Image (cartoon, rainbow, N blue to C red):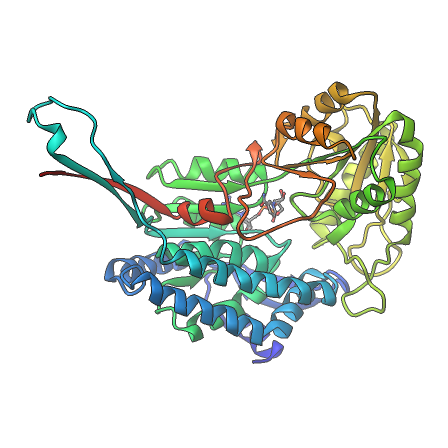
Length: 485
Ligand code: NAD
C-alpha cells in the first residue's frame, strides 16, 4: 500500500458535487482533490448500511466473532502505522514523530472495544409490584436486552483524523451497528486507508461506508436522513446545534463531543516548573487545535509574573515547522480559513487592549503557522478571544487571589469540556474537582487519556460520553422484556 495509491483513490472516488482540493498546510500547495458527495451518495450509503444491518451479517455475529475481527483491524493498523502516520502528518502538518506515537493508541481502540463485544448484556429484574390487571405481578419475569442502535452516522473533524475515526468506529462496531462515516473535508486521506484495513480484516461489506465531502452537503444529508438512527458527532458547538436541529425530522438520537474553553488553575503552592511546562504544552501542542487545550490560564497572584514569564519562554522556544523538518515540535494550523479566523481574534484582541506578552503574528514563511501567543490584560466580560473557542495557539493568562475567585472565573463560560488544577494541596485539588463545571478535571497533569475512562462535555461542550463502557453503550439501546410465568 502506498501513499500514492491513496492519493489516486480519493481523486477517483465517485461524487457529484464540487471538486474539493486538499491543501498541504505547510507548503500551501494542493496535494490532491476529490469530488463532494451529495445527498444521492448519502442515500446510497445509508441504504447499504441499512441492508447490512438488517441482514445481520455483523450485528448477528456472536460477540466473540466480532471481537476477533476487531483485533485483526488493530493488528493491521499496527502493520501500517507508518503509512497511517504519514497520511495524517501530510494532511494536517503535525510532526511525523507525533503522528507515529498516536497511531498505536488509535489501534488500541479496537482492542479495547473488542473486549466489550462479549460483555454487552442486559440485566434481570425481580419484579416488586403486586396486583395490577392480572393480579399476579409477583409471578412475572422482567429483563433487559442491549441492542445496537442500527445505522449510525459518524462525523468528525480534522484535528486528529485517525484518532477521531477510531474513537467512533471501534465502539460502534463493537455494539454491532452499521455505519456511514464522514471525515472532515480537509483530512479524508487516512480514513481511506483505515476503511481498506477494516475491509481486509473481515468486516462485511456495507457495515462501514465512507463518504467524503463537505459538512453542509454530505454531513447535513446524513444528519437529516430519515433512515439514520443515531449520529455521533465531534466538532464545533455551532455545528453541534445545527445537527440537533437537523435530527428532529426522525428524532434520531445524537451524541455530541463539542468545543471547549478549558481553564487551568495554577496555585502558588504548585510545582511551578512542571505546571508552567505542562500548561504551556496543554495549549500549544498541535498549535492549539485540541478540544481539551487549556486556553484560559488563571494564576494565583503571588506567582503570576513568574508563571506568565515562564509560559512565554516555553512559547518562544517551541520550534515550529513542517512534519519532516529537523527538530519540529509544533506544526501549522490546518487551513487558510483557520489562519484567518485565528488572526481575526488576535487583531480584535489587540485593538481591545490585550497585552501581547509573546506571539500575536503568523510566521514569515510558507504555511499556516502562528507563533504561540500569550496574552494578558483581557476583559473577561467583553473580550471575544477570552470567551470564544479559538482553536489556535493562543492563551490568556489572568491572576486570581483565592479559591472562590478562581472557581468563579473558571466556571464563567458556556463551555464545560475540561479543567485543570495545579496545587500540592491534595484536599484543595479534590475540593475544586467537585466545584469545576467540566466533564473532565485533571489534577497536577494535563493531556491525559485512556480508552477506558469516559470523556464528555458539560454545558455546551456536548451530550453523552465516549470511551469506556459509556462509550459503547452510546451505540446501544435498551429493550425491556416482560413475561408472565
Ligand atoms: P466543524 O464543526 O466545523 O466540523 C466538524 C465536522 O462536521 C466536519 O466533518 C464537517 O465537515 C462536519 N460538518 C460541518 N457542518 C456540518 C453540518 N451542517 N452537518 C453535518 N456535518 C457538518 O469543526 P472543525 O472546525 O472541523 O473542528 C474543530 C472543532 O471540533 C472545535 O470546536 C473542537 O473543539 C471540536 N472538537 C471537539 C472534540 C471533543 O471530543 N469534544 C474533539 C476534537 C475537536
